[in-house]
Image 1 (cartoon, rainbow, N blue to C red):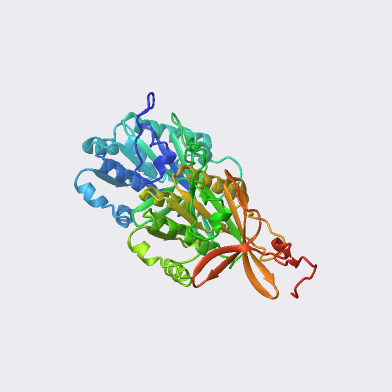
Image 2 (image 1 turned 45 degrees about the vertical axis):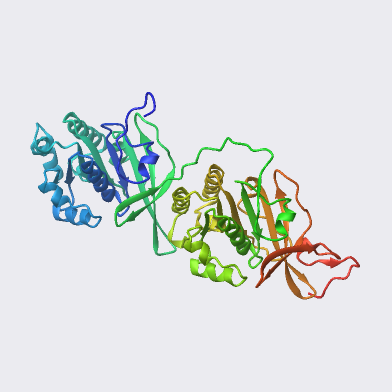
Length: 488
C-alpha cells in the first residue's frame, strides 16, 4: 500500500475497483442510481455477495420487491442468497418505507438482525420509495440523511439504490439525495442498432479518495456485472538508438524500409479494399511466429476460418503456427461490443501472453462503434498509449474510402502516432488493375520514396520495382512519360 493512502475495500465488481483506484475507503456510503433496467439491483447484490465472500455478512432491504424475487434474481447469477441466510451470513428483509423507519429507529429489528449476524453492509433497494414519506425535497433530504447516519451509527456501511426518472427539469427530491453518499455511481443504458442494449457507468463523485471519471462501458453477464475501464497506460520512457528493425516477411518490402519495421513501434497500413492490407499484416505476423515468438491478430473483419483460408489462397499456411500456439486470432463481432469493451478485450489479451507482434485489422471499427467524434479521439489516444506501453511491434490496417484518385491516409488522425506509414493503392494501367505500395513515413531511418508494385499471387506477396515509364501513379490513373493516358 502506498504511504499515506487509506486501505481500500474492494467492490467485487471486475473493472469497477480500477475506477475507484482499488475500491472505496472503509465505511464509505454508496449510492447507485439509474433508469429502470440499467443494472442497479444487480450491482448492489454483487457488492453484497462479494462482501460476504470476504467474511463480511450483510442485510438486503427491499422496499418494492418480494424476498422470493430477490432470491430468484441473485440465483440467476449463481449467488445463493437463501443458502447464505441459512448460514447466518445474510438477511433479506422485504418491508415498506414506513416499516424501514421502524426497523432502524431506537435499535429496531434491522439493527438487531445486523448485530445477530455481524453484518457490515446494508443495502436499501430502492430509496426512491422513501419519498412517499415526505412532502418535499427539503424534508426528504433531512429524512434521508438521518436514515443513512442512523445506519452508520450502528457501524454499518450503507448502499442505497435509487431509481431515476427521465429528466423533466427543475429540482426534485432525488437531486438532493445525491449530496449525502460518499460514492455516487450513475448507470446508463441505450439501445443501438434497434436491438442491442449498451450500458455505461460513471463514478460521479467520491468523498475522501480519488477516482477515474468519465463514462465507461459495462456488461451484465451470467456471472454478474463486468466493467471495462478505459485507463491510459503509463508511457514508455525507454529510447533506443540506433533504432533496431524487424523484418516484414515480404520480399522487397524490407528493402524499401532499409531493414524492416522499427522494433516495438506502431505501423499504419492504409489503403482501399482489395489492395493487400490484411495479407501484408498476416505475413508480418507469420514471420514473427516462424521465429518462435508469439504473435496476435486482433480482427473485426474476418472469422479465424476465413482468415486461414484467405492466407492459404496465397500459399501462406497459418494452421501449424496456430496449432503450436505461436499465432493467435482474436475475432470480435463489432456490432455486439462497445469501444470500451473492444479495447478492454485487447488489453486483456495482450496481458495473457508475451506477444512480440500484433496486427489490428482494422481500426475503422473504432469509428464505426463511436457515438461521436470526441469519443473516437479518446479511444484512439487510449489505443496508441496501449500499443506504446507494450513491448511489441504492431500493425494497424485502415480502409480508406477512396479506391482511386485523391485520398487521405486516415480520417481517424492516426498518422501522427504511427512511426511507419505504408499506403497501398489500386492502379489502372492499360485496363488492368495493379497494386502498389509506398512508404509515406518511416521515423528513425531512411526509406524508399517511390511507388513500387505489390504482387499478390499463389506464390505469396512480394514487392517489385517501381512503375517505370509512368508518372502520377499516386492518382491511380498514371500517364506515360510521352503524355499518353491509357483508355479508362
